Amino acid sequence: MRLYADLQIHSKYSGATSSRMEISEIEYFASLKGLNLLGTGDALHPYWLRDLERNLVEDGDAQGLYRIKEGGAGTLFLVQTEVATVHEYMRKVRRIHHVILMESLEVAKQLQELLSNYGDLSSDGRPVLSITPSELVEIVMSLDDHNFVFPAHAWTPWWSLFGAFSGVDTVEECYEDMSHHIHAIETGLSSDPPMNWRLSSLDRYLLISSSDAHSPYPFRLGREAIVFNVERLSYRELIALMRRRDKDHILMTLEVPPSYGKYHWSGHRRCGYGPVSPAEARRIGYRCPVCGKRLTKGVEDRVEELADRPYGYVPEGAIDFRYVLPLQELIALSLGIEVTSERRLNSGEVVEEYQMLIRRFGDEYRVLLEAPINEISEVTNANLSRLISRLRSGKMEITPGYDGVYGRLNLWRATRTTENRSYTRLEDYSEQ
Image (cartoon, rainbow, N blue to C red; front, top):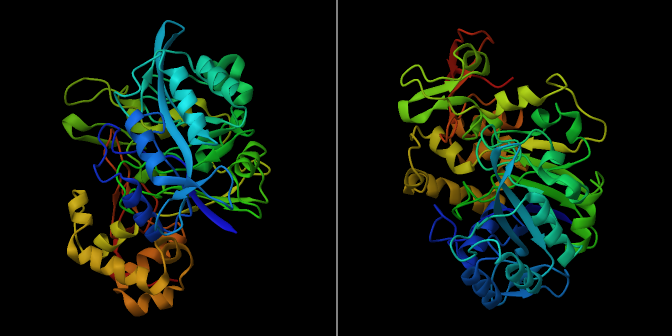
């Protein structure tokens, strides 16, 4: 059984999250995306945990996983939360996010009671705890050794393991004597496996990709995912596969191109200065030439600081990956609609085209990854079929994201790789 899993999302109780992040809404859009398995998000929040208990029941065939009690499209849920820890290390405050996977809602209730001593779990779906990462892991794993902890969006400048502003340089510096319980790292939208492969110290960790979705729409939910091939589906089986980085049963991760992420390159959004390439950012000393304040250092810059391998190195046993981009964004781009808000992505013209493709091919992943290009061409505009073809071949042109601004998809392609690039209109580009 092929399983498309998004193991880290949020609920409506997290800050800056859509009020539509309800279980029924999440499952509906997951079915459009092609997801079989979702994290529940925010399982320690008392109101969301209550909602989960009301709406979910353990699946009879997949022990430790849940499904909607009545109706639903068959999507399974895995109990999951994200928490933040704040502590001081080497005279600097470290703010790091962690994902916790659990076998049952009962375990979540028990962990809720234990962690309530370190912060207000009702204040936000992603609570901030006054505790060290090692203490967190010790509590989580002492409660149930089937729990699974990994650092969230490991390269984001703020609130992450390797964050330029609040992280550390190694897994061991973060989790100390509990590091042996860490088996995976979530790469985040602004990095991809090739960037992480540049650090030999990360070879022993599974690279996990997930959406960290704050709204249920398919352009957020499942924009990154991990793909399993399993014979016996259960929580413990999935955790065992991830702990041993089982390449036979973990087929690949689905990744947005890292330049699409909000922190890939450096810049200063407040002044509109960016994106800035790593070479240029170093040249100006990571200072904004407009206001003189510090730039938000890009993930690519941070990877370069810690890397001990050249770009292009592939470690032995590396798990495969494929690039994807939200289909609604590709549709908008193909129709000449400038994406400035979620409302534009949910406009009637875009949604109509999206629904037509889903009716024809089944779900979004099939459109992006599997549907024959000639069949896509039969039912949609020529620009969109060409964009999907270029996405599959890794030829998308994207203006990198910076300082919280998503990368911008371009209806152009570079014709030469120089500092002064020239561009060709996609409409004039015939696929080779």
